[in-house]
Image (cartoon, rainbow, N blue to C red; front, side, top):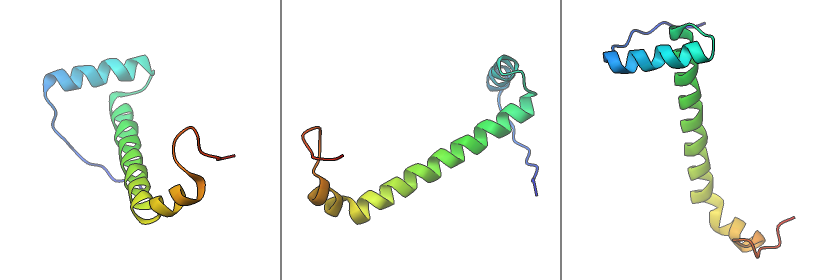
Length: 73
């Protein structure tokens, strides 16, 4: 179920959101919601990638090498 939040932004930020929403032919609140959701998804992905590297990075490098000279398929 979708939840509603209210946030305050300065006038400059709101005007930028309005411009970008108009460019994408969306309502300002829909555009802001989509961008916030995408930002959270990106953050989750990066955190997961960092955790993977910390846990498996050395074994991956040992098996497949690093850089353009590696033997990755």
